[in-house]
Image (cartoon, rainbow over all chains, first blue to last red; front, side, top):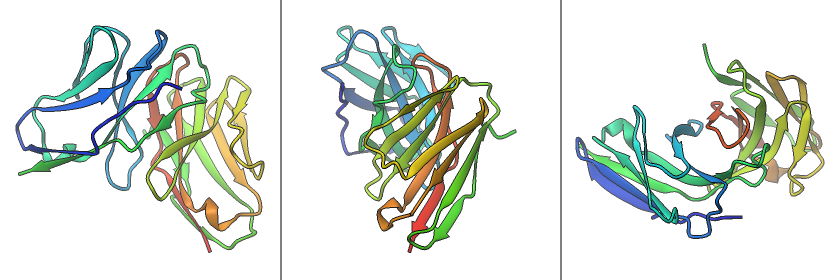
Length: 113
Length: 112
């Protein structure tokens, strides 16, 4: 299974942009790159996903490297409510069951006021 | 108008008991999942159910049995509970083919 590697933790100041990196050097051509976040005592929350092109939505932007071996989740203006664990995972679009999806340790984002 | 709901939120029980966790989604998704999050916070998929096809993760003990009465529900039944089953269990749903998954609030199971 293609794995992802993320820093254990990152820190940001409120109102500043945050760039959360993810390495996935063994990604296959059919893998989508997904980002989720989990606030304390809550279920994971979908943030964004993409395949090859950069993606934007109301929560964040996803920048995907040209070789797809890495990606960066961009929070344009961090707020205290963005403090969470951010997970970068790969999901094979051919798999109807998400059978092999495992969330790793993720990156714990600390936001300072 | 909760998208994915689970009951109960907390479940405390004795070793050896049988318990069930219920999950419902109102998103019209075709696929539903059960995940287990252990004390180290790793989230691992246990089962997925897509249009009446159950896909089982073979590492899950057969004491765990998912049941789907219809496309909107995927319940989890656990027989002969063990201490190691203590964890937070999340239900999720998604459309097929790599789309976004939406998770429920979780059920914290404590086995004494």
